[in-house]
Amino acid sequence: MKESTGRRIRLTRLWHIPSVRWLAEYRAAWLPADIVAGVTLAAYGIPVSLAYAGLAGLPPQVGVYGYLLGGLGYALLGSSRQLAIGPTSAISLMIAGTVGAMAAGDAQRYAQIASLTGFTVAALCLIAWALKLSVLIKLVSDSILVGFKAGAGLTIAATQLPSLIGAPGGGHNFFERVILFAGQLGETHSLVLAVGAVAIVLLTVGERLLPGKPVALGVVALSIVIASVLGLPALGVPTTGKIPAGLPTLEGPALRLRDIEGIVPLAAGCLLLAYIESVSAARAFAAKHGYALDTRQELLGIGAANLATALGQGYPVAGGLSQTAVNDKAGARTPLALVFASMTLAICLLFLTGLLENLPKAILAAVVLTAVSGLLDFPALFRMWRVSRLDFYAATIALFGVLLLGILQGILLAALASVLMLLARASRPHVAFLGRVPGTNSYSDVGRHPENEPISGVIAFRPEASLIYVNASSVLETVLNRLAASAPSDIRLMICDLSASPYLDLAGSRMLHELHSELAARGIVLRIIGAHGRVRDLLRADGIGEKVGGLERVVTLDAALGGGG
Image (tube, rainbow, N blue to C red; front, side):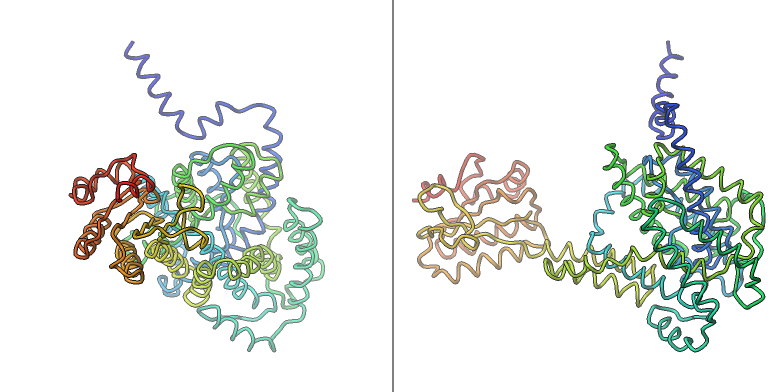
């Protein structure tokens, strides 16, 4: 009996592992679609991963390791059925902009630090999961993300434009890169520019005519054939060169956390960006296919993906909208598609790396430029300007933070701006002063409805937010200003309607004590109505209930007016 019970407990625990659930529910009819999706995703991922590895300042095969191993890790613990994991443009640029100073020019140390960042991201994911920090994603608003993505897109474009014309480039931020690029236009290699320009045209047209198809792989294959036949490397066109064949070897980190100053902030920035990118993409496709996404479980999925990638000497990975869209359009039904993608990539690493030696770097720059063009959502910025200036300012802060400070500092500034925006909104809530709706016993905001009848000798107000430490003084100031403007000698009763305040802390209660003292000194009675259960409990415990004649839950504004004479 005990053995049977223990087996059931073990099975119940295993059922909480996403891969156990979807494998148990797997249908044979889904297999062909997952195989096709996996092969298609691999075809998409090869050119993109090569390009992003170059953007990160790492050997090209390291990008492929991210897709191969990251997908396997996510398939084990991730909760999304369509999310595709691999290197992303923003994280690649974050690595390039931060690890260089840590490595001090040592290429081997550079790769080891990038890999250690992946291990650290995995550890932080586990900590965040244990502490249930998935709720923190709500602190980063959509407006902040619009500005951040636009800044990241422009920054990434500035790093790739020199490769498109065969120039060396340089600079530490967007503006420096643009200035240096403008000065190097005279060094343009016409053949390199022609190769890059044709690739951009083919990629753009191909994506429109063949959405969801591995257009980039076709362009890469065509460019390799042309470069080999025409001998473009001998004509001065830079290429990727030899890519080592074989699968990545799995091993632990070569460095320790204490050996690298600043590795934890870098990993935290990568995690924040990876989690936002991954959950945003996963939510979109979960809603499309009608299943629930476990945002807390996604921390474990992303952590497993980064751990697996780091074991293969890769750098941090994340889910992305573009690769997930490719996976979904190709018919992926479960994360088994990621496993087939990894198998396809493994075959390529074993047998096909020799074909990539003559791949022009201008082609990879074109792949990155077309991939990040979707990050530039300027119509959304213009809409914010028309609809909500506060959201526009927050997005602009994020945009220029990335352009001036870089990806890592930019996303941290974006997160801080998001929190500050939240506090700014909460610190000055709207206070509605109530008047009688003509011909009724109902009351509403006089500011929104000037036709409402004023209540003789009474000020009734309704704070339209929880009364907490960040806004209590603002509400008190607003109410006292209204009292001063209403000839206090004519006011005999003030009514505070807390029906729109679901929460109240001690600062809010202290504000009501102060309001009562101010009114009592002027001979004005204070009444409180509409308080929610927990709010009433706190106010009674803090002694305010006795001062205002009780806190009965059934008292309405109309009843309070009748009782007030």
